[in-house]
Length: 294
Image 1 (tube, rainbow, N blue to C red):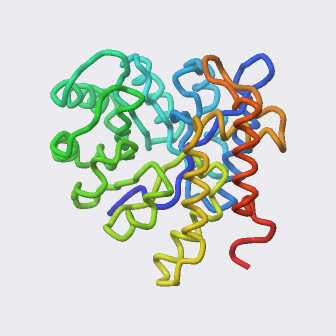
Image 2 (cartoon, rainbow, N blue to C red):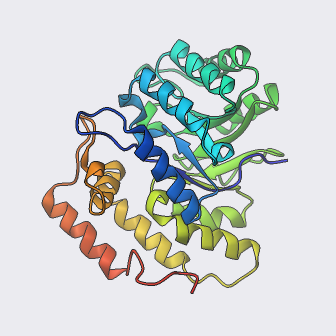
């Protein structure tokens, strides 16, 4: 049975003016996007500025979320550069009742499939309760999973390596593993991915496209004619013209100024780019003036 399927947002992190993590507001944001249509949320993925937030704050956040009503809908991002920090966060999370993790291999150093297999072996052997989604995003970590590597990991640890988030897009069309979640990292791949057997998506822009994405997903499985997929794709293409974290925070800060807080070396969009983003989104009637399901 596939364990992870549906529409998942890689949540942004909400920060205080002193650049510390606003735990309550981040949790509230996650609750809102689940209410808007997401099946679940990834905490501390790349969109959540994970590499820039301290391990202590992450543990505080996971502890806070352990009492949340949506606890079963959360996936914890644990792709830290330090193996021992990653294991530590995973162990803390397991003790708090979380078992699902999104894990990217470490950044900076060069390595290949052999080293990656060894890395995940150490994670699983250290945290045998874990259910791990591999995070394939060469742009950020410098390594791109091969089909062979994913197949090997799923074969060695069939109960632990349960899926892949494919943001490099070299896997989702060809990878075929029984009871294995395949989740492209863009709404542009949602419908075409579902048509070839993918499980859903995990994306940054589902922070704001949850309702549209969920309708595309539900209409596919209900055999209903698609009416909003084109709009969904155009919204994603619009955000893709800019750094996604910068664009999302610039968009979200219009309703809450706390979203303007962003950790260096990230930044908000420059004024001219923000204007372009908002003008293009308004031309798409996004966000919609009326409910898309009406």
